[in-house]
Image (cartoon, rainbow, N blue to C red; front, side, top):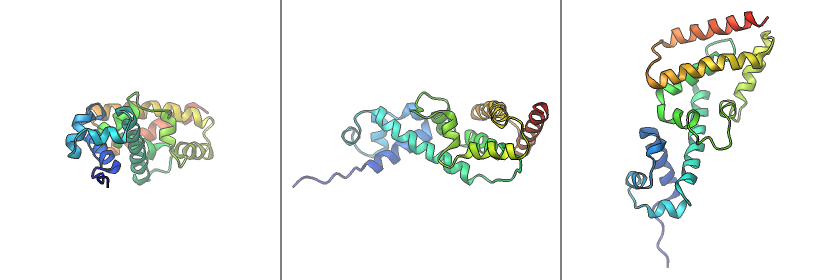
Length: 185
């Protein structure tokens, strides 16, 4: 009778995600993961061919975590893109290591940044449609212009260089939205 495996894939993946969240994906090594999971490296390589395969699974979990964060973020603003931008900047400030993995690393797999943002629920597409309904002449271009500012702000939040309050950030995004829509008329 063979011995039952006491270390499951779920345990390894949970430990890898926690390690990535705490220390960054670069620190998810077989030895550190084994220590975190309380096992040897053998179960890791029994379940995964290599660490890249495991990082791919961690990445997918991180993408789902980001989507859930954005979905749960309070929707307060009637203008398109503002709440999405606020959620993105907040995520960068609160979940630095997950943000780095998703939006600043080469471990994106086959997903573009747009696909990550849009998610399974079509978040960006919905916001573009809202902008069109509000009279934006070229809502896709409007999104790109706003997104450059939003991503830059998120990167600054990641490094601690963004010191605007939530209220100030929202007011700034609203003013940029209004300036772009006016300029694009």
